[in-house]
Image (cartoon, rainbow, N blue to C red):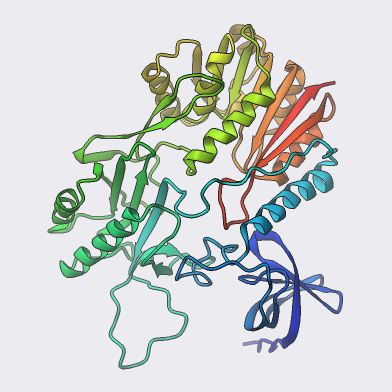
Length: 471
């Protein structure tokens, strides 16, 4: 075997900036070094763990001097769990970094004029703001150091995957992202499973009963708990009874059987064990409109920061500047949240989405809210959005598009250029792919207002809205 070259420890390195994937940046002798879990202004000793021609990656050995940009930690798992990499950075600094991230991507990758960029919209709540968390059971618990020979053998973990390690899970005692009942439920599930010897899932051998735990809550005070099992095991129903009897706050208790080789469950049936088969979310309407009700089931997509979702959609409505006679297309409509949010401002909204179940939910939500001027269609966007479809359903005056992280297919961009709506409002969770698409759309559109929105405090993720006006 080829011996790996021992990399050096760089001493007294000043952390200068925020970089990609939530890592911080240091510069040593002209080389960029990416380091997690430190903030600009820190001075630290850094162990190089990977070195390339143009950059290196390192980990902190010791922090010699703390930056005045640091914030007090709320999570006991910070530094091991990779979920909230910016939690030690003051929130104002997080927002500044995200705004700069949007600007850099749009200007460098899309050559976009960002003079119309507005200050980022920060989140009202920066802790306990999520309405959904997914946890994993695993026989492979993560340990920073190998256990000693006389240490008791641990049965596994219930928590989050360690970044880059598919088979290692960090046992989570307290997470500061969802209301505390989530912590109580998760810890109670762990205790019951261990006391009654219900086996955790082994991701390598694909054996064991308990696989995932999904906890959702709504602003209306409803809670959904979904237990995903990989195989039936005597006594697992006792866990469900225990949850039902111990936590009356759970209004929807369900389970999903998943014996596949991956954790995805969007294509699997959920079974209601107790309570309703859904929870209901309430979103404040826009511009005096009444509040909207949304039915949420285990497979339903809904923005995980409920309060910020309303603010995000309000910016979309402002940018769209709709009139009562307008026809609106809502591309990648999901469960129809944006379409329904805008429906009272225009003549008709046509929503298109790839996932059939989401379209079923969108139609159900339209009916639930008594909204009759929406139509929803399922299918691959590049194949559905054709000249024939436009001829049948009407030329759009305004198009709202909210694609997945990969952005829009080139055929979809080409069709938008052919349709020439007077305005496109582009919502993105990935400014890099948004920049790519904006450069293509620049053939006929100019970018006017730009509005970053922080949906996920303490992470590097940011949403961005761009207003495109036909030249």
